[in-house]
Image (cartoon, rainbow, N blue to C red; front, side, top):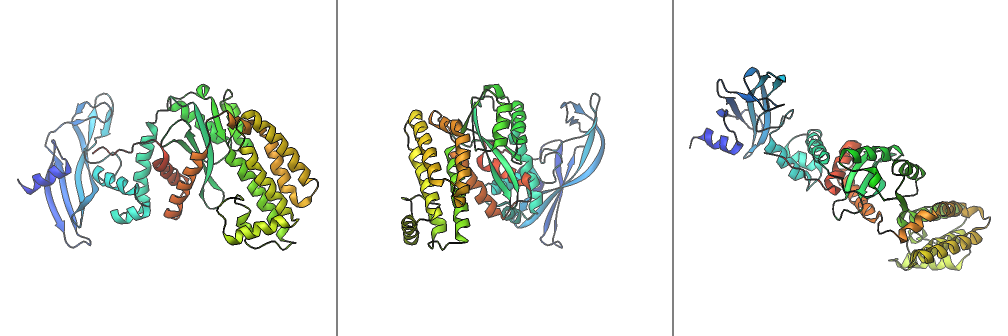
Length: 413
């Protein structure tokens, strides 16, 4: 078999295309294998719009980067025709070894996508010997293509939460299908306001879903999120996940500790100790700090006891018991706080809890939570740290889809 035939077989080149020349440029560093592909004279080509066989109108030369030939770079060059279709006019014909608009072969892009699933994009770009910016263009193309094929016709319950895209105040909001057992991410959009829910409604409609079929939404206590959910899916019940209740009180507790530390000497190792449960995995120093806090009359100690009392509410076995415990908890906590200035952050947390009490109690009758989304957020942030940040929200969005969405990124070769 002739060497041209062997290389053509490896490239998957079929008539009317054929490999007509090969040349190894040893003057370049690294060396470059140049492969020239040409079409048979007088060949007809398919219209890219309708597939009709048409004659060539004119030709233009293009070059594509292919997988390395051993340690040498490999480039494919071909004169690609524009075809004249009687129905659709003049259009550039497609070639079987590359997608339209790309300057990489399909096999090159397939290898790149396999690497991106296993390592940071920057590391994959170094291995492929291209810039990470060019690799991101490949990634976003195939991710967008896969997301466009999502079928959301069965979606009946969704959860949403924000996650940081980069330092500062750059966020994306992630939506998950709460009934999907694996890879639940179905939509990611920049920002974290009420507009994100409206964009999800449009996304849902574009992928076969109907807002009227949604029966439950699980979210945090963001007023913007809840108001928008009420507007977009008015028939759905809204459940506030318990994670966000604990998070609200934990932040209030930390605010009390920081305010009190300005005027009072607090036990060492207290900063992280108060953020943990009393029976949690504490170091010896943290356990000693909590014991000292219990023995003193510090405001931080009172705030910590209120936060710990929340666990008693959480352990209620029925919705009725939870309602009684929540009412008792609110009354008891307000008695502790009274008019103490240092405990004002806890007053705010209690007001938030009271405001969203019905939505919080909904969790005792719902089988859904955003716990999976919180776990996924950890994976998203780990990927962000491994990547040392993303260029923008678009690249972070693409990575979230790769990690958590039910998509099959397929490069047809």
